Length: 298
Ligand SMILES: Nc1nc2c(ncn2[C@@H]2O[C@H](COP(=O)(O)OP(=O)(O)OP(=O)(O)O)[C@@H](O)[C@H]2O)c(=O)[nH]1
Ligand SMILES: [Mg+2]
Image 1 (cartoon, rainbow, N blue to C red):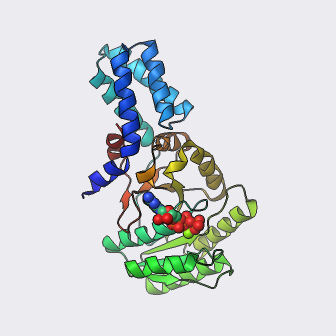
Image 2 (image 1 turned 90 degrees about the horizontal axis):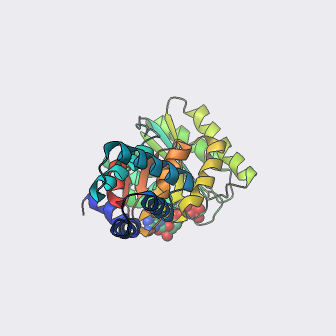
Image 3 (image 1 turned 180 degrees about the horizontal axis):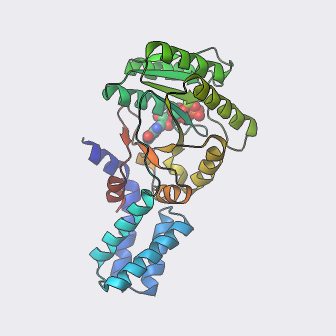
């Protein structure tokens, strides 16, 4: 299956909801006030936030009025353009090497799985990769990462359970410097964003990376479970305050009908989505493409 169809397949649940609602709207209404109200409701039902949905509908209303063209195709295309614009408001950083990528997020969102997928992704792009098991909190975490590392065929740096995660990061940085590794991917323990001391721990790990590898590009990526929908915006805000996020990895798109929240996330927080997880296997990860995403949901 090609890359495009994988994302499209993953977005099927979101698309099914949106497109049947839109067809219903077009069949029932002339394009006027009631239509626009209905459109706003549909966008909100797809988990686009109220604020963003209002903005989108206002823009479409203004454009449609201006061009005086009011058929279904015109409005759908307009909707695609406006949504894509919102999605690309936050600029996607280009990855430069050597790179350190640290994955953060609440429990169970798919951080460790994403480390494995990213390792595979960078290997495929000809880069040398080391993974760091800085989730020292959960007994099975390092073992879980070892399985991924072995599968991908990359080096892993790990310590005993209960040790300081910053010490793991320190060792991973030393090893990467010594070996000239292109990409270090750091797995961290799941943490609730409301637990201040756990957010402090993340800051400490970040400082170790910045101090030990000042010449590396450092990307702090928040892993978000796409089934969380709009509530994820609050998580993103708090993680961003703590460590200044560079981007988002959106996982479980394949099991979500709420893909629409990505649009409000990018537009309201200005944080770009960098990768999407579209399944549980090693190669179920893709670099995010806004145009494909919009084509996938509409
Ligand atoms: N369908 C689907 N499942 C995923 C995806 N990414 C991860 N998962 C599943 O989500 C579950 C949790 O994944 P983990 O990688 O262990 O999550 P984590 O964030 O490391 O969890 P903690 O370390 O406990 O916080 C596993 O069952 C994964 O297979 C995805 O893109 N799609
Ligand atoms: Mg984990």
